[in-house]
Length: 216
Length: 181
Length: 211
Image 1 (cartoon, each protein chain N blue to C red):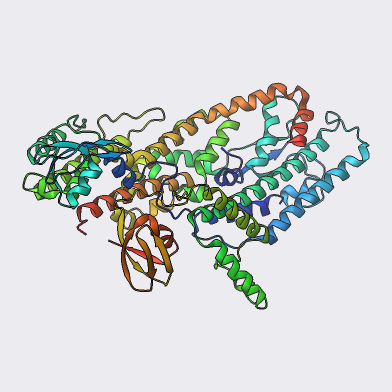
Image 2 (cartoon, each protein chain N blue to C red):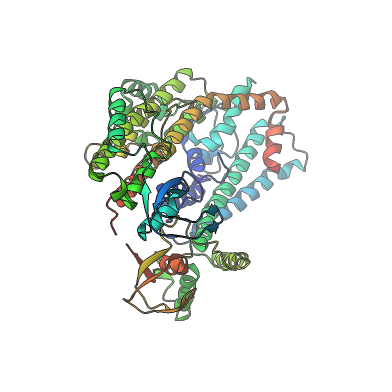
């Protein structure tokens, strides 16, 4: 029945909300739903054709009802499509704000594709290639926008942690080589397995990205 | 209820039994037959988003009702009686994933005054039970499994909220008092 | 999807409650001289040990950690007083004792963590009493939640951290009950549509055509 595929999309969206990563974009279902809308629209045109633009619902209540059902189905599909995409877009924005390396993953998937397209089928769960091309573009542009917005303030990190600090300085252990960072107290070279006592604000980003681990 | 709200859309997908009062051309697909008319007197289950709009005319009092609505099985008198007798033993989720939302929508369409009280009482009693389970970390695993599995979506959110806030405070307090660094 | 612990919206987290709590003033006995500090939150006058002075709790805890001061616990935070309050709470099942400050639980936690040696000797006993107090009050809160109605909930003298613990749940229940109770009102909206039904399908079709 009309609307069933749209519902399937929304059920996907519901699951997405409780997953840590974006599942693959359902391009097949999305395409089917839009096709369904086009079919319904064509039906409407066909139903109305014999009336030559002079359709009087009061005289033809049964036909009017049929038209109403068609329109309700189209509206329903539209709502499902929009809601599905919105859930995903919100997740993408959230990732941009929380600084998870969404774009790196996108890059990785592109490399995979460049290596001969072997990666496409195994995309499931890798988080990156699960974006549609439009979503990748959205993520990139949103990331740029966010960076430009953040760039206006040099001494405050808008995407920093909102968790109130208990200490200004913390002990961290380096999990992966992260190169050299600049702090107020000079440069530190972060090599794997070393430990540092640093200002939390200086390394927050690296902790979020999994380079450092906070010790307590 | 927002346009984009996933739970609202899922609520809208829940089915209501309807009877067509007039014959409508080309709607056969509603009962699974494509391209034929749907006959007067046909009974089909329609999702709320369709049934509600077609049902509006039922309350118009005009001679041409399109469809008439019935109570969905999830809200049938038998279930109502079970809820009155012992609200916490009914598996709401198997009846409808968005049980209360379904009830609310049906109440907007049909005159069922007693149902308001039954649903309110049920929700209140079950919420108290949910609070107990949520605050008792052992209870979740042992005794409460059956009950918690039968929570509808709204109740599930409630449990999650209560469980997480209790957990956060417990973590905060034990973290602090054992917090010798 | 949200894997952050922060609450950009929604109820406060315990860490945020503790952070707010650190803005309170507390009396200290400085152990070192210190020049005045001009901070965003206000001016901190110079320290002249052993003259007592009042400063924000966060600064007190920081100085305490550096052994530059001792903290004078607030008068209510003593074993005998908490014992008395615990007794009142146990004897009056329908009452939250009004003698506790709004931020009692988080203040006590911060001080027990930051300066257990300043709490008049036996901080172990104080811990036990506070835990008892928390449990008795928690029981009452749960009792109260069982009686929630769609319109209001009254629990006087509940602390901020305690409110934080139940806010999400209480809000969910009240909201759920409100929706069920209001659902007959939806009929009104449809009734309104009924009135304009003189235009019948024409109207409804038009709405969806353009909508």
